[in-house]
Length: 207
Image (cartoon, rainbow, N blue to C red; front, side):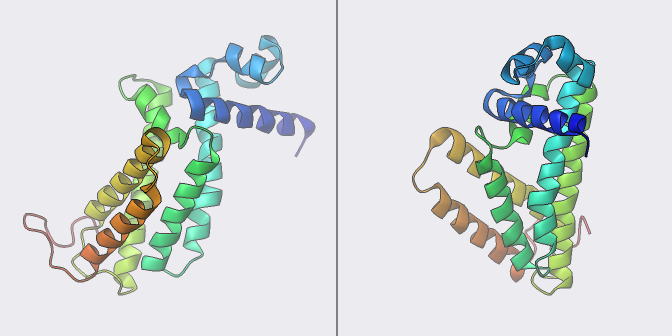
């Protein structure tokens, strides 16, 4: 890695902290240049535009997420152990950022703003949800989930649980957040282990 690459990674780390605390939209060439003790022209040379900067930040965060959340979970045996590892890794990833998960804050910033940044964010989020579906499918193959489990529904419920945890952790500051998160996860896992498919849900949908 070159000195220039090291400098860019340092800039992105600073930008990621700002985005976590204040939102991705708060990261501009000017604000990041000031935080990184650089000139605007020097920072502009790295990214060329605010839009490119924000996409690079999402890409950087995505690489950290893959390294620290997804890859370690995939090293754990398939099934419920892998799901628990994934949840623990996601919570650790979010907790390591000053303001919590950047993808959650970015979703708030860009949900009503069409453009390249939103398109990239949607691509990342769809890939994450697909990962949750595939992990649910591997739990079926491992025999931990019933064969008619709806993988898309599981992905929806698990991600909803994580987003609820994020709200409780970053905003409500509830003392029993961790205990309730663990209880909710165990209840979700039990629902997919042996109970019949909920009424109105097509067995095997999302497989």
